[in-house]
Length: 460
Image (cartoon, rainbow, N blue to C red; front, side, top):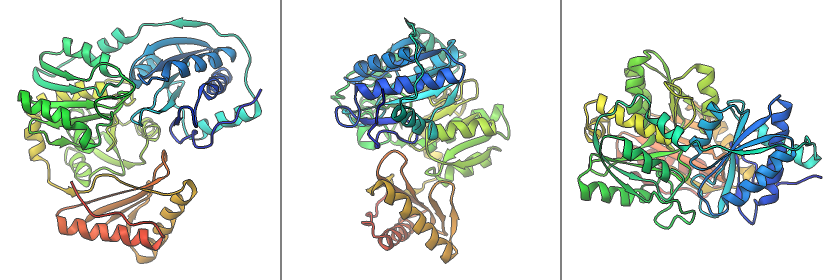
């Protein structure tokens, strides 16, 4: 027996597709067969499996479990929960790997699979290898057992270990995602006053799309903070591995700003440690980490790539603009937005008690949100190469870590190919609006030279 995946579904960091079009139960079974085979060939025998709140997740979970057991692997089902709960299960139970069925922050008709093999991210060539095993039918055979394990209460207890955050008045928006049940439990344990939105899991996402990095999705949280006069608000994406926040005035505290706040207490305990952020992060973050005595390290975007770099550099903390925050300091090194929320409360207390004051003290930079524009799968990488060639010929100051990040007297701009979508991604940051316009003109000029529809100028 063999299986062919839709080529668009095997991504860099995970497997993702539109259910009924590019992803279905047969794919889930084949993923189970392939991942189970990899577990067996690595000397393992057991896998933890969890799923998010999407309407089709239970169907895909059943098909995945079928594939895993047919490969002779025992399955520990942990049920519905956020992705970091599955990561926690993989880190603490006697298992050799883990799979979470999740569409992350994608629209409701998407779903996918995130995997961990022997405490390491499973991505890139590993995911392509699942396609090869399926095409060749090169699967182990066997009959694994199935058991259930209730891990949610253990996970919530672990989030609260050594809590030292003090009592605040906080708003929480779970966006009807899988983090909701965890938020409901956390607010009963946390001191202070807590107001929650949309903690009921609903895969149709009736209130707003669960992506806290888009400001429009934080409108209800801002209103809650304003109406109740709260200290700040915290939001999560659909599977609870990305965090968003607003201060007491309703201003968004962006991913790189959250990392700057979280880094300060960590660097007090681990002076000189390496703090990693992705290429989309503000220069203000890198400057702040250096000012605090840490070693700022710019790295490639992508949760699997960041986790791998953390292990390599023994970094205690890393983060992305997209709100993935990774704590190895007193934790396991995976991206967990719920744990990041607990650590944020602690950091705010340690840094004077007001997220609003912390945000106000940050340098004011004028920057664009992440801008995306359509490009085909093969063309997007070629465009970046063409841009890099032209910049090299012009003698520009370019960082090539992940695409082209160009430093100028005005600030910096970035152009890179997305690893998860058929798009090019651009971002720019300057000290003032005039500088931002000059940077945007440079991006537009480069795109035009490669025959790509230019993006419009604009900041936030």
